[in-house]
Amino acid sequence: MTENQFDELWQRAEAEGYSLRLAAEYPAWRRKQNRIITAVTSLVVVVAVAVSVFTIQQHQPRNYEKVYCNRVGTTDAQWASLAAEMLKE
Image: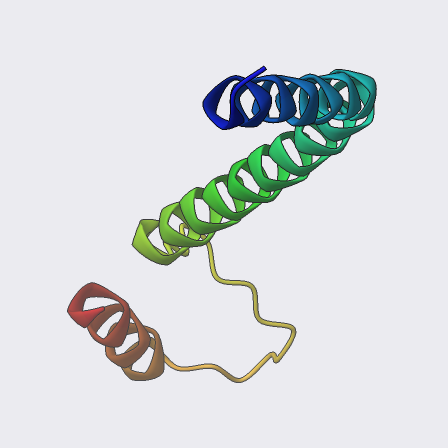
């Protein structure tokens, strides 16, 4: 056996050992990758929903269609002033 043949056999044996170890560790690695992907995807979905809800709430106008007053002595001028302020908003 020449030195080149010996080196080739040695490299094959070494590669076979690595391939067996990688094959044995692959299922655990794959589960870990799936957990990471699931966590990142869940986080992205939660952030997207939170941002969309926040922006929708910010763009909704605050309309006050009715005004209630329990005071008896409110004048028409006060109601007119209140209506003008509501129209400005």
